[in-house]
Amino acid sequence: MIRLTVFLLDGRGLGVGNQTINLKLPSSVTINNQQEITDQSGKAFFDISSSTAQTINVTATTNNLTLPQKIRVVFY
Image (cartoon, rainbow, N blue to C red; front, side, top):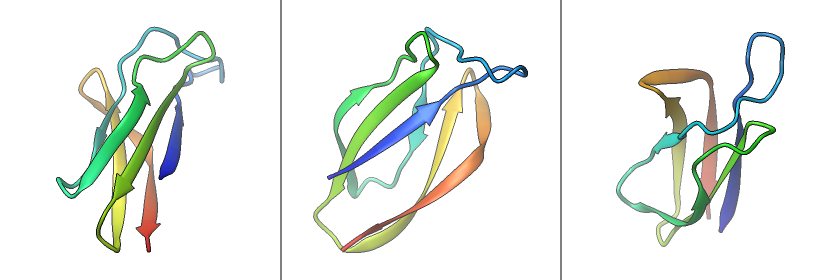
């Protein structure tokens, strides 16, 4: 299992709370546990797993906006 942590920050670098974060993941990846609503510091987290060895690219969205940072995750 891999924990992905997303921080949603405003233009001043301060956390933005109470926002829903969605991840774009392939159907072969399972979200096992999540806190998809950002806390007061702007943090949300997702525990993901895959029963298949694969490399995926993860994109996060909020309010129909795609966050600019993308990550690559490798499952062995």
